[in-house]
Length: 180
Figure 1 (cartoon, rainbow, N blue to C red):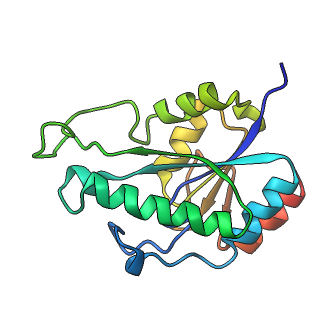
Figure 2: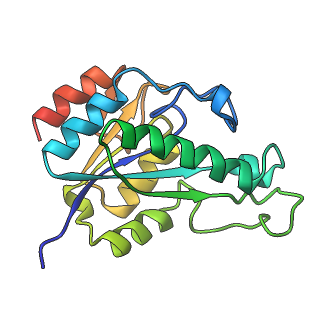
């Protein structure tokens, strides 16, 4: 059976500007070039998946319902650009949470790779043919552990051994994608 390949995106810092615990439409500002990047990936046969840590839920900064409302709005904005987001996987946990439902050490919180494996199972992904883009070392470590073939760090950190490429912008990622 033919496997899919995915463009796996972190949210804050990759899709939108990361102001810290973004939880409302008013706080959400798309990063220039994200729609073009996703359209180029779709044209090359990639499906689009988002994998994001959302510890703001566990920390009580916003609710699960707040996250879901913002998520629905974000996916609708991609839809308006003819970009289907197949799934948004998220981890609401944090071991220091005061909320028992979210206070745990889990396999879905990056840098662990549990959600990557779940996405691979759910969408029949060949992770070795997929691309992960993140802005934190934990994004790259999770992708590396899961066996994602191409790992691109948007330069929030100058060096990350788990990243194959470190870039400054979505335009640089477009160049890499065209070489895929």
